[in-house]
Image (cartoon, rainbow, N blue to C red):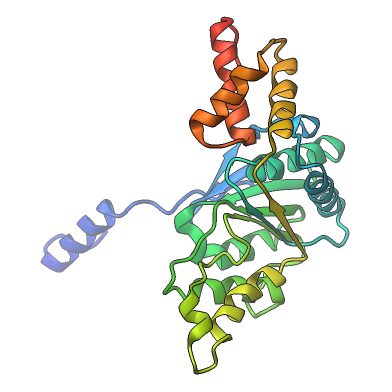
Length: 275
């Protein structure tokens, strides 16, 4: 106990009481998934994801991701993954579903760790913790994007991927989703700069090349959209009119897995069923 007659000691004690306690350390072997906020991890008892067979219209992407995640869970060589492209086409769902499938086949071997939007700079601390655990981890960064003037973030990511001093340990791989392959927006001015005209553009595009797997996801055709709707509806025992599904997508300006699920959710609600 500090000397309470000393004003500085009293101030120090008061500050100690106000300071938040250090975050509790997660048990990295106890949960199938975790959320990392930059300071600590919170265990997630259940991964919410559709079964792999329910994901339609992305067969090639599904096969590549599921096989790669299975390899990681099995402790053999696996790639970092970049899933880029159209919104709502199942990029994030596929990551979760592939992990869920691998966990069902090889219980306890693999965990999903989702890094929050504000936790990017703290990933080296996460890597250091996970590197000491006898388990494999897929660190998931969803909807990644960098500001046009951000040069630090892309270089950090490239360093983690290509073996810099803060590279992720061998038991960790990254899964990143983004709206564009280059992750950072490109501008025509980058092409027109008379001094080293391609340097900035090449530096940004080089990020995608650092991923062993980079898969594009594109807007669904009408036939694929209806196939996705039919798959979701059949799983819930629901019937639907194709014309209504097409109108639903048109009203939202998107033929995607997300809009298909939203349509089926509407059908389930009308039928008094849960989705």
